Length: 417
Image (cartoon, rainbow, N blue to C red; front, side, top):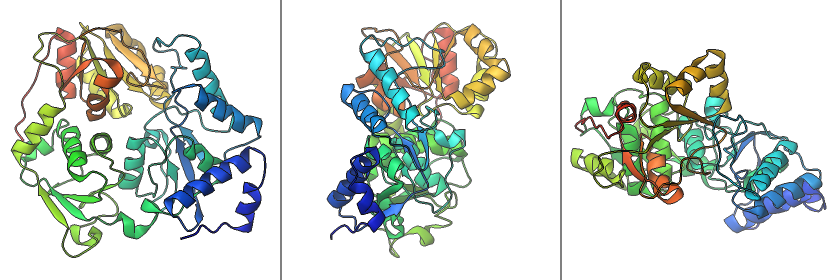
């Protein structure tokens, strides 16, 4: 199928400025993907502003030099630096300077200085059924699944090209038929107490991602809405362990009022019935550390902590002093409220290290320890931390993470699946 560009798109692609370069990137991507046309988009979320090497900085600066500007609302995912000055980044020159130049280039392109992996918590919530071009795996899956907007998993640099052109290839999850579920993921065999717990959702997300890969599934057996933070945790873990860009939960997410409505065919191609044993194995698999009598750090906030999660953190600490630090990663939108209420000072006085604009698995913040052990309640942190930080991981609930940080040793509360 050949790609057809409108006269306006052709004229833009013929230009030698930054907008022309961006349109050629989008058009060539569409050709490779087999898209017949480009479609207008309402917004973007840019993942490509995280420094991975000088080429990314030079690419962004090339767009700036060409006079490019974003034409739709464009928020920014985490960068490599904490521009709010909450935490100390161990990134040395020249990498630090290049990372700063990269972040500045995206500001000049007209992107919002959100610097968060959870833009949906900072007010960027596209409408149900709208087409957008988002990067960052957890943001993509939340946007598709919980908000019901339509995006594919847009990679670095294609995301900013879409932002500049206001266009995206018409393929994949932009098309309603491709958003229908082909399989069922049934959790009705798990206990109500487990499903009601915070610890369940990263575990189930991790299992879901491994079981379905990039297929579209519908989760059944969930009796009531678990809350946005639970859906955030489920999607982030699923997108990390698999290639999940969209999930449905019958009776919870907007495109799945019931199983029959969202299934592509009268009968699913596969049905995965989750047993307590499967959930227990998935939970154990999130920990990579051998039996340890101590921990060196706790890290939470992948995706970034919400206001409600900071409320829970403060309530669980209850004014106690931490024996090991809790690195609490969040966006500047949440930080502003913490500072306004005086809560930032209280948390930091107790031993919490607030990390804004970035997180501990994408840039060096935690001490460089041989044999370090990190505890987390995040399925995404559990997946990426060993390779990105060198720390072995222990997975636990937020309550157990806090108790472990207070005592300096692992504490686990068992909740039967």
